[in-house]
Structures are given as structure tokens and as C-alpha cells.
Length: 386
Ligand code: NAD
Image 1: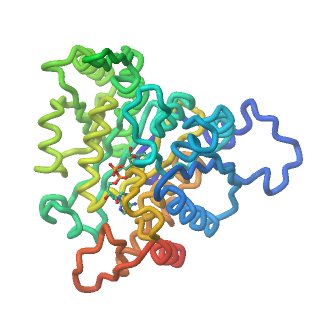
Image 2: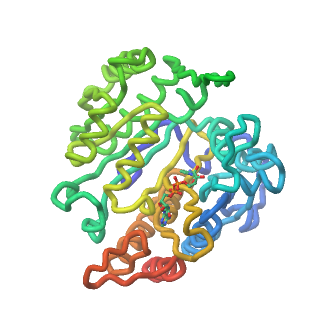
């Protein structure tokens, strides 16, 4: 069903999801039939890359958009990083396309001040998105753009499955006059459902012949939550005989990712380790500007967003690389909107634009055949290649 092999166990078809509990009138106009996408542009380069993504989507078909605020933009306008109305709109959509949030304007050490990132956490919690999928596969045209040598990264095709709603990001927090507390809690149920998602992804990536591999990353030599993590993942593993499971400590995983990334197939890990390791893995692709992500739950709309942040240093200059957002749109078409053929077309168009030599500043190496371009020219090239 999913051409990239990143199967998702817990989601029904779009039509089934839209019919269930939906009060869709019997005679639907074209606008009613169009997939409903909530667009959360956010801050920094967010509005630029999301506008580019909308023009790509418009070249692929007809979509209904609902623009809502998140992050710093929402704090400025509404005093909160995610309003109830924005969350409700997301809940009633078919998919959510997100740019990025945050920036120096909203940086504060005041624990009571609203922060843009709370919008992201609230969105993940509110939509019960517990699995973040981050595929890492360097494109042929960019093998020399990575800070790692070509021979080291060739053949890399891995998927990081990051747990998204538990762990230290959501534990109890406290601040005393000269101390601070961040509690890390995981329940068996939270670990089990992300393990199932990761094993299923490994199974489907391998195909009917089997041979999938899952590496579970933890810090079981130090952390109690990691020891529970390891036990539960191993238990779930006994149900997936065709997937080979191994466990790696997070410090070793960080080293192995740069030393020999092609050894990995699917990596599953808890919230904070996944946050850090997936950014590290992103550099294999040459730039943070190339890495897409999908955050999924069971049945409801997913959130599709580039892995990078709001890049305030280049915001407003028309220089942002929109490709991670386009690849996130491809994940949205594939995992959120049941349009795998369009997803393939978009993935291919991104490769074609790069193969033609176009490079945004973050990818430009000065090598022969490269042409340095901004967001608009890269977007036009991808649309032309569709
Ligand atoms: P960042 O990802 O925004 O930027 C890191 C570096 O990569 C910068 O030099 C930036 O210019 C570059 N970069 C990132 N995306 C790019 C793109 N598409 N094209 C070209 N270059 C790109 O990380 P940061 O600087 O640590 O954080 C900036 C802000 O973003 C902070 O407020 C942070 O909290 C926030 N942030 C948000 C998210 C999110 O919305 N999911 C993720 C990470 C960071």
C-alpha cells in the first residue's frame, strides 16, 4: 500500500476516516470532496516554505485549505501558542501541514511566559500523535553535499521512529530558587504502541520476503525508563518473528549513525533521544533542509512538517530550502490522504530538480553543474518536473 515501505498499522483509509462520525451531506460539491488541509505556517521561514508547498499541492490537484496560527505568530495575535479553535480545526481536518515555530523574539527564561514550542507539544498531545516517522535516505544528487564522505553514506536508507507523547518532554516540571526538575515517565502502554508501529514499519519495508531489522535505542545502563523500554520492546518483538531486533545504547547509536549509517534499517527510540538522533541523521542527507517528517496517531489526522526549525537567520530572504517541506507534503499525500501516486510524483520531481543542478544556499557546494537558487526558483523547478 505504501510505496516507500513505511507502513502504518493503525490508520484506516481517508474515505473511511471521513465518513466515520462525519456529517457529510449526501450531495457533495467539489469543494466538499477536496481533502481538507489545515495549514499552520508558524514563524521564521515557516510562511515562505508553506506558501511554496501550497503552490506545489495546487499543481497536483484540488485541496481545501484552512490557515490557522501556531507558535510565536499565535502568541502575538492570541496570547497563546495554540488556540482551542486552531486545535479543533486540526481535529476536523484530513491532514495538517506545518511550517516551523519559534525564534529569538519569543525566547524567554520566564517559566510562566508562553513559548512557541508549546504549540507543537499541544498539537501532538491534542491529536494523540504518538509516532514521529523520519525517513533518511540521501538523494543521489546530494551525496557530495553531506559533511560525511560519499562512501560512508552511500546505501543509507533508514527510518527513525520517535515516540512523541511521553518521556521527559511531558513529565512533571518544577523550578526552585536554585534547582530545576524535569521528570521522565514512560508507561508500558506508551512503549508498546510505538514498538508495534516500529516493528510493523520494519516488516513492511522489508516486504513479504522478510529480513527487516529494528534497532531499539535506549540508555538502559542508567535509566529505569530505558530498562522498562527494553523489556517491553523485546516482548513486542516476540510477535514479529521476521524482524531482527537489536538494542543499542544511545551514546553508541549517536556514534554509529555517523560511523556507519547504512547498517541501520528502522530505529525506534523515546522522545528526547529521537529528537537528537534524527537531527544527527538529517546531516547525512546534506542539510536539515532536506528532512521530512510525519507524526501519526491511530486514525485521526496526521501532522506533516519538515524536521528543521524556523531558521530565523535566513527568514524573509527568499533563501530557504523548501524541499524538506515538499517531501513532507509527499508523506502527507502518502500517509494522510491516500494519494500514493501523487506522493511518488512529488518525490521524483524533487530528485529531478536536484539532478538538474539547482541548489539552495544550504546545499550549494560550488561543484561544477550546480546553480545556486532561492526558494522561488527551486519551487518552480519542482512544479515544472511534476
Ligand atoms: P533551525 O533548524 O531553525 O536552523 C539551524 C540552521 O539550519 C540555521 O543555520 C538555518 O538557517 C538552517 N536551516 C534550517 N532550515 C533550513 C532550510 N529550510 N533552508 C535553509 N537553511 C535552513 O534550528 P535553530 O536555529 O536551532 O532554531 C531556530 C528556531 O526554530 C528556534 O526558535 C527553535 O526553537 C525552533 N525550532 C522549531 C522546530 C519546529 O518547528 N519543529 C524545530 C527545531 C527548532
